[in-house]
Each structure stands twice: as C-alpha cells, then as structure tokens.
Length: 575
Ligand SMILES: Cc1ncc(C[n+]2csc(CCOP(=O)(O)OP(=O)(O)O)c2C)c(N)n1
Ligand SMILES: [Mg+2]
Image 1: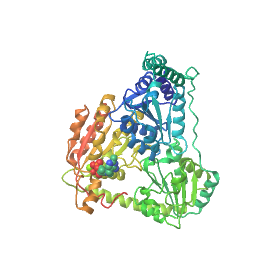
Image 2: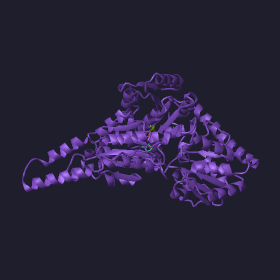
Image 3: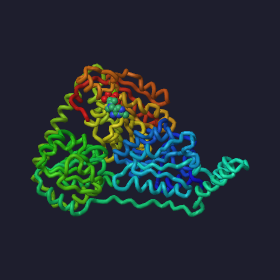
Image 4: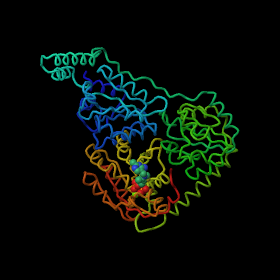
C-alpha cells in the first residue's frame, strides 16, 4: 500500500464516508486512494468550506469530520474554520499536505513551517516522517479529536510519503544525480539513507483498528451532591448546551431531561433536543428566569458572553456546572458543584438518581410558561407589521410553518439570523447548526454541505444574512456539481445590519456597513442553481413552496428576500 492508500485505509476503518477537499499536488494520492475505497470525495471552492463541512459532519454524526488540504496556502486558508471548530468543541481530522521531507526548509514550493501556525487551534499536530507512521497517525488523530473536550487534530503528511515506494526511490535517485565528485557522492549517500529511514517498517502489517474512546461521566459523588441540592430547590432551572450531545445519544439525554421535570433552556446544538415544543422547554426571558432561580444547572454551558458571563445568576443560588472542561465549568463563576465530565451523561445519571418529580414546582413552571407565551404574543404582533417589503419575523414564521419535520437549519449571519433563532423551532436533536462562540460569518455553505450529505433525506435550510452569504456563494457551484439540493434564504437588508445598528447609533456613521440589494439569486442561477426573489410578504408562501419543490427535485435553491427594517433586534449587542 502506498502512503496515500494507508491514510485512506485508516479513514475507511474509522467509518469516514466523506472527505472534503480542495485539490493540490501535495495531497493527490490521498484523494484518489480515498475515492478508490468508496469514500465520497467532495471538492469545494475554498478550504474553509471543506473544514466547515467536516465540522457539520462531526456535529451530526459524532464521527470526526475529515478535510484534506494542500500545503501552504491550503493550510493557511483553513485557520478561521479550524478556530471555529476548536471553540465549538467539534472533533475534526485535518489532513494537511507538506513539502517533501528532504526539501523542507530549502525553498520548496508552498513550504512553510505549518506547525506554529496550526498548533494554537488544534488539540494535536502530528507530523509524519515515515510511511509506516501514516495510518497510526490517523488513528491517533481520531481518538484525540474525540476524547475529553472534543476538537480538531492536524495530521501533516509530506508528499514524498504518499506515493508508491518505487516512485519515491526513483525521485531520490534522480535528485542525487549521477555525478562522481565527493560532494555528489555524499549527497547520494545522504539521500539513500533518508529514503531508507522514510521506508523503515513499510513492510510490517498495518494496524487500522480504531482506538476506543468512551465518554466519561462526572464522579458519582458530584452527581449525588447535585441530586441532594436539586431535591431541595424550589425554582430550579436547567440550561443545556452543545456539549451535552457530544457523546452521541441525544434521545437518552432528551429522556433524562423529561424525567428531571425542571424547566429548561436549550442553546447551541442542544436546540431541538426536545422537539418543536415541550412542556418543560422555555424559549424566552431567560435572563429573568436565571435571576429568579434558586438552583441553576449548566449542562455543557460555560458562563461566557452568551450567558452574560453568569452575571444574571443570583449569588445566593446554587450553581451546578457539568462540563467536560474544568476551565469552562469555572469560567467567570465558581459553581457550588463542579461536575467535571460529559454533560449528557451527567443529566442521565442525575435523572436516574433523583427521587420522584415534585409537583410543588408547577407554579414556577407556570410562571415561566406565562412569560414565554406573553413574549410569543408580542412577536406575533411584530410579525403582523406590514411594510414595503418582507417582514423578517413574518418570513421566519413562514419558514417555520413550511419547513419539513426533519428539516435541518443552518444559521449564518447577524440580525436576520438572530431573529430566525428566536422564531424558528428546530424540529429535533441536532437539527440546528450555528457557528458557536467564535461567531464566524461564512459557515453556512460548508455546514449545509456537510449536513445534507449526512442527512440526504432531510431538507437542509441555510438562513443567510446578505453580508454572510457572500463568503460562500461560490459553493453554489459545489452544490450543483455534487447534486446537493440545499435551500438558502437570504435575508437581504442591503447591509451588515447587526454592526450598522450600533455603529450608527454610537458613532453616527454607517461607513463600511452598507451593501446593495444585490441579485444573489442571479448569482446562484449562474452556477446552475434555482434562483428566486421575493419583494413582498404576499409572495413569500408561494416562493417558499417553490423553493421546497425545486430542492425536492434535486436542485439547490437560493431565495433572495428583500427585508424591511425592523426594531426587533434593537438593544441587543453581543461583546
Ligand atoms: C468573519 C466575520 N467577519 C465579521 C464579523 C462581524 N459581524 C458580525 S454580524 C455582522 C453583520 C452580518 O451582516 P449580514 O450577514 O448581512 O446579517 P444582518 O445583520 O444584516 O442580518 C458582521 C460583519 C463576523 N462575525 N465574522
Ligand atoms: Mg444584512
């Protein structure tokens, strides 16, 4: 087996179905060997898309997503997406090309020192120096990516390790030349020795078996302590984040939450965990609920900006934090009980341990429910406001009413997408993808690509800001070439509105925040997708139906929706 095939064999052994890439001479053998082994090689138009797509695969399947990128600029182009995955705790394996081992540091094409560039954004950089180490490096990468706090791993595969042994020997023999001077004879000797080192162990049998990675629950003593505290709580509140789903058993986590009987807010990838609606699930007025609760359970949720740094949790309340990361469990607020371990397993053990649910909490739940419904009524009123173009809240309500029961929603943008996250109800576990704490614009195309490949039977919707959609527009070419019928809805407000909103208010200047009502639908059509445009609310239901129908026929779709300005997001700023 040549080196490229060894890498591909290891991917196959780990159940990898998709390899995302943008080609380059340094990685060709990995791509063609993967294809030969039945792994679907999906070639995209920007390396960041490849990593975003791998990220989505990881989130939806629990198996690390894989991208292969070429040396130098291929690797540097991944950095934002890598950082996004690291902060979202998404397990990825990135295969990076590299200059030939003997030429590194000698001015070879695209040869840079990749380790210091990549290392801060991954759990591990594996630099492979021998052909026989390729498959074990991939095996290690898969294990490290998943264990503990999940995250990306980078495996650097120099190009001279990836070809047939005969080809490698030929190259090095050619490089040594045929001269007979002392210097040339020394070079010949040196390169022959180098090749022997590279090929040492190549004839040994290859071990491809994946390493076992089991999620670890927090210690029983912490679960017992939490159980005791919860039993006494009058107004307990549960907040669940993405990490609670990392162990891959969403139904078990959902069942545990139901049994706990505590009102719950869901965030990140946990949105949709309990289906569209659930008696315990609240969607609005979280801040006030946190202020009133006497016992807050944070399951896989750090006290970062999304939770106002924990400021709204009362000092006197009991704080229980379950997290795989000891640092995240203690971020900004020291919990009363820190349960270090998998947050999903924590919830399951807590549900097993707890005594029968207490009905004294009914009035607490009813109070939260009342406020939740009051807010929904307000939103209904705002959705009813008629303007010149499309009301963004009404558009999101219409999408919520239209999208299939198995729909996956991908969120990429500012204000429009924040409105969508308020209004849309994810249908089930792992059906909502947003960038996470890094807040990266431009995740949409890659996330949707990964999601649609993992769930070919499901509708995949991208909710785009008009600013955000610009990053990945070229991927409509990818969607068309690969037959990936996603539905993109662009909330076109002709601007980077989330930024403009505050900038204009505080600095009285809209510089750099203004866009045109560009014809994004025509751009998509130019790539062979279906482009649709809607200027007014009256056209929305019909065009959403057309979009779904086109996608059902296998066509990717972009619906360009001209939005009205609203005050809906007024006052919300994230720092
Ligand atoms: C890569 C990146 N660049 C810049 C930003 C800063 N940013 C956050 S929201 C936003 C505006 C997004 O505009 P658009 O996608 O049109 O959504 P809108 O707010 O207009 O609905 C910008 C520029 C970011 N989060 N990520
Ligand atoms: Mg915009």
